[in-house]
Length: 469
Image (cartoon, rainbow, N blue to C red; front, side, top):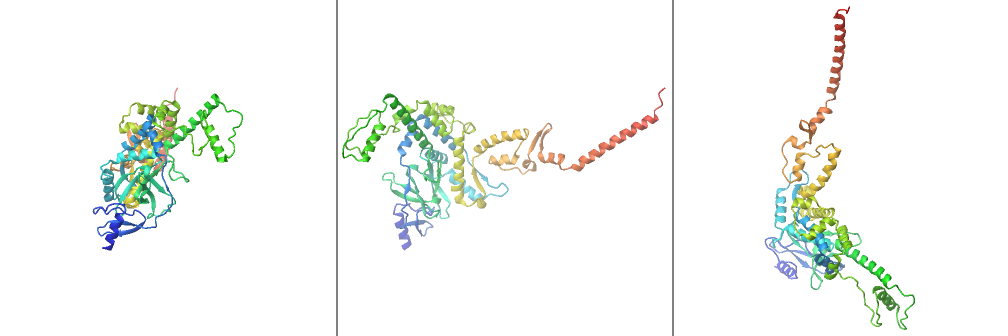
């Protein structure tokens, strides 16, 4: 009874309500694990929570203004969203020669088909994941785990409220992440490493938060605007030679502040007194300013370069926000969206499939065939030249890449070489040209004997022929 009371007390601290059918959550926050009798595990909060600093994005509103107010940034983000949403995943054997664990495979398929109780499709969650990755620098899913650490639900997380724990030492029982309260931005709850799938944009050794595409764009815009403003100010109103005496009693920080105010505005009007804390912000990324930027050619080029999509595709997307078919959309996929889909695939294999055991246990991998086909198409064109327009993969390899069962035929595991008489297995050509060298020698002997016989016959004919008068 005491254990049950402690478990209820733990749940009343604002963690999660127990789910009798699903055994609550798992290994969540640092603290004691308590058996509740129903198979559920509650976490009793202790005073051992680390006091290290949490890191989360601070300029969220400014960054999201780009995605909401700039038609060009919106078009670039939507190209990425379409790619990750339209790509269809498949579960393939990691080793084609070994069987897969069908029970685990069915659990993974059921999870991805219905990832949460809200009936939000997994494709829609991937779109939100991709937008946060591009705008704020990281995307995150929360994984609800059973007692055996396998996930039974996936939930989207607002990246603005997602914080990284500084100094996490790799202990799976200690919190690596935190969810912040949207009002106070104080810690609402902690997440252990197995409870989240996280992908950081432009991950760096000295920064937990990464660097998003929109952050890079914002830095580029501010640098260009500041540079243009400086050159225009110098052309219209060059700096005067001389000095401004601020009088007695002025400290060096005040002098530096006044100098910054003079340098920061085009036509300064200085009122001395209370100057501390004053600042000049030339660009606020407001709706009006971003609408003005949308008309600038250089801004469109910056968006295209940073998001790694062509200007032509940006223009088409901006003018007609329509969804192309899966084949058409991904066949012309740019390097940026394709690379993001590949990174998401790696994160899914690690954070979702990895929770169901090692590859040696289930022999499964998640893949996106249309992404693989794009890479294979490019590689096939290269190999086509190298092999003299011959085929370069077997029929069963092609079927496995498409998620189909292999054919139980020997010829399906052989490379077919096109010839004038039709496709010929490569193994047949191997035997014909390389595996029977004695046949070649025999052929040479036969040819020599035939030549000798021809010469002897010619001599006999010469002897038997009557002399010519």
